[in-house]
Image (cartoon, rainbow, N blue to C red; front, side, top):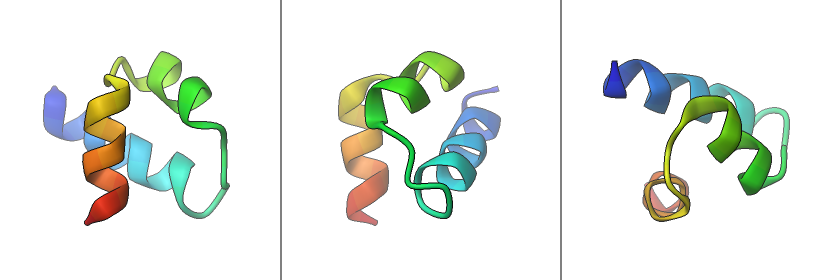
Amino acid sequence: MHTKSLEIAKNMFFPLHLDPKAVAQATGLSQEELRQLKGK
């Protein structure tokens, strides 16, 4: 499940340039997890 959330976040965050808070709410990931994802 967590891996699926990370994939969804990648697809929302990077190509769509959505707000990190919106991505966090949609995926259930924390702000810290999104910062780590963005750093990859």
